[in-house]
Each structure stands twice: as structure tokens, then as C-alpha cells.
Image (cartoon, rainbow, N blue to C red; front, side, top):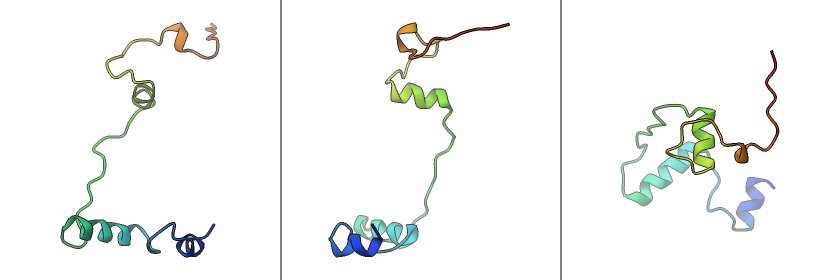
Length: 76
């Protein structure tokens, strides 16, 4: 589906890119146009993503065997 088709079906309000979306959000929030956008301060590791996905926020050790979906084989 194209953006024009989505607009015709009233799935979106307007066509545009990131800058237009930021300006629209700023207007709705009563902020000045072209607000400063601050990205994340650090990149997430794969372990951070897994902890968040599995709701294991305080967990830092090795996964219990019940969490492992496939067998783990260690070889020399």
C-alpha cells in the first residue's frame, strides 16, 4: 500500500517524512517548530534486549536450562 492510498483510506492524516512528523508532534505539544531530538545515550546489547524481552531486569547470570530452546553443546 502506498502513502497516497493510506491517506485516501483515512489511515493517516498527512504525507511526509520524519521532519514533518517532528514538526507536527511539536505543534500538538505546544513546542516551537523543529525541536531538538535527543537519541538514545547508549546502544543496547543483545543481552539487554533478551533481558527486556524476557522480563529479566535483575537477572545477570547464565540462563537456566528451562529458558534455552535448543540444546547447548560444548566442544574442545
